Every structure is written in C-alpha cells, then in structure tokens.
Image 1 (cartoon, rainbow, N blue to C red):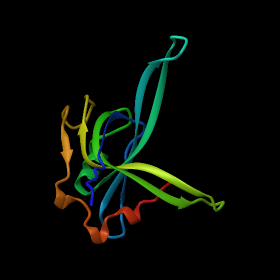
Image 2: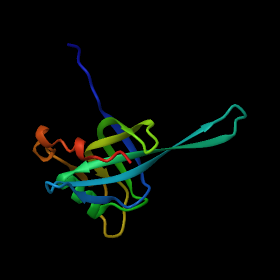
Image 3: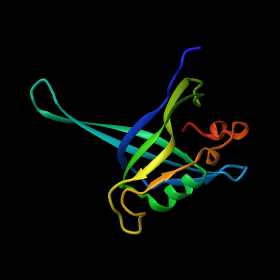
Image 4: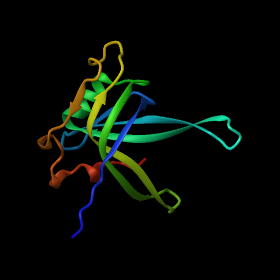
Length: 142
C-alpha cells in the first residue's frame, strides 16, 4: 500500500467569533472560519485581492481554549487535516463541504483579554476524539 498524507497549514484571520458546542456525549467542539487573503497582479498589471474562506473545527480542550481566547479579526495559524463531506440539500442535490479539522491552532498577534502573543494551543493525541466517537459523524456540514 502506498503512503498518503493529509495535512494543511493555513494562516488567516477569524471572520467571526468561534462557536462552542458540545456533542451529546459532552465533547467540546468549536467551529470558526478564517479568511486567507492573497494579492496578485492581473493581466493589466492592476493589483487584485482574492480571499479564501476556510471553515475550521477544533475538538476538546483545544475547542474550549479557542472559544475562550479567539475572537473576530484575530490572526491564527492552523495545522490540520482536510475533510471533504458529502450531503444532500433540501432540494435533493448532492453537495460537498470542505473544512479543516485542526490539530494545532497557534494564536498570532495581540488582542485585549486574549492569550499571550503566539501562544500555541495543541491537542495531544489523547485529546482527539477516539475512533469509536471520532466526532466526524456529529459534524453538521452546513
């Protein structure tokens, strides 16, 4: 069997305050979206800006820390795995949802009442949901 790797590294700003929820089994889950900006010059040599919005999910202690210390506009660095989910919308159309399940969130910049600059919040392997309750089944794709 060939080797594979699913890892992303992103740096961006939160587009809204994180939303903390708990699963039925009491596991903390926080979701937020980051905006990643890119500038480039078009064919007319005019400066253009492109923004990509990426939904992020964090689990357990990391989820609670993100909900406590992060807020809209705060820059973060996220390392995690890409997750693509499929679902059927209300009209019966198949849709796909792409998000990142964070393994590590590093707080960047400063903010009032925030964790210290460049504080890293990382979940040890025992802090991730186990295979029996991976949490992936409890994620809502919209």
